[in-house]
Image (cartoon, rainbow, N blue to C red; front, side):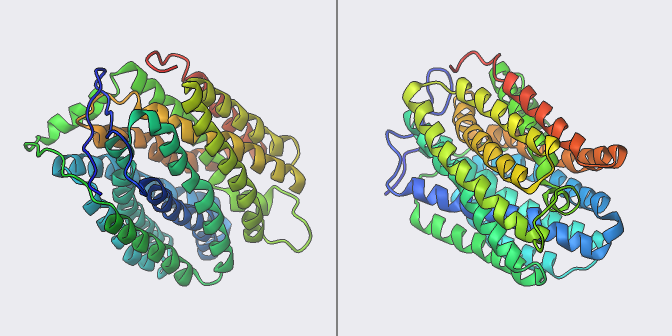
Length: 414
């Protein structure tokens, strides 16, 4: 079935077609699940263990360097790929190209054994994955009507918990065989990209004249001049920063901060913690997306879920025990899952320009990638200065509270 190109509302927002194409929501779920499986399995487990294997004595600083530099690539490639797909009027070729390139990039990452080469390999993976992600993210404002954005955002949001479970389990099974684990994740994304583009047809958007680079830079900055979009950007950035302060070092936290049960390895603990978080995310993602549509209240759910995440982050700071970690995993999962689902719907309602939806979503995705630049360095400084991870949890909770407060000034959405 051919899809209608998005129209604009009176407010200048993309209205989408009259109804989503049949099968599009499951395909969005599949596409996002594969993406997050790679992100969680690689960045959350394999990359940390690979870095530790190269230089155990400096693992925190080296991991911060690797993930921080690679996040710069994510920041650059996401809005750039979004703008290019806007100009070409197509999303599917970018989804397919980025997905297929994930396989050789993952193979390269798994084949190297120095911090420098690991950094280069992870940069390449981040670059191609953000080409894939930028185009996939833009499918929602392109092809989903306004009244269905909550359900679409739930489908997108469910990709995180499902991908997290699969990613953590696969990574835990290949902790001593990096290359095989990386290849499996790359192949998953490549196959998913083929399935998505083969099963969804798209109408080419109107062609656009070439825009000078300087004008594109001004357009990116101009998007943040729109107050509601700017506050949505700030809120997303703060919550994601708080989340990644802890998540980036989860393996090391479980290794050095938490009193694990006898015989349990950190990678095995991740494989237990992640499903707890993911199940909680699935519940809150579906419920939050449905209720935000039904009640037409986005800000309430976004703010409350950010506050819930803050409470969950405080639990391991007060009690560095295995039961406390499981409580933390469940509470943060509930909060973060609801936030990401409903906040995605909120963002699509405050986009500055219907014609530049992918570009503006790419600008917003800097709020996802940008904190990943800051988080590893900030976390390594906090851990080094304070000599432990307790302050890290407190700092993450404070950022989540600030993220909750940031949605209050948004005026055009309830």
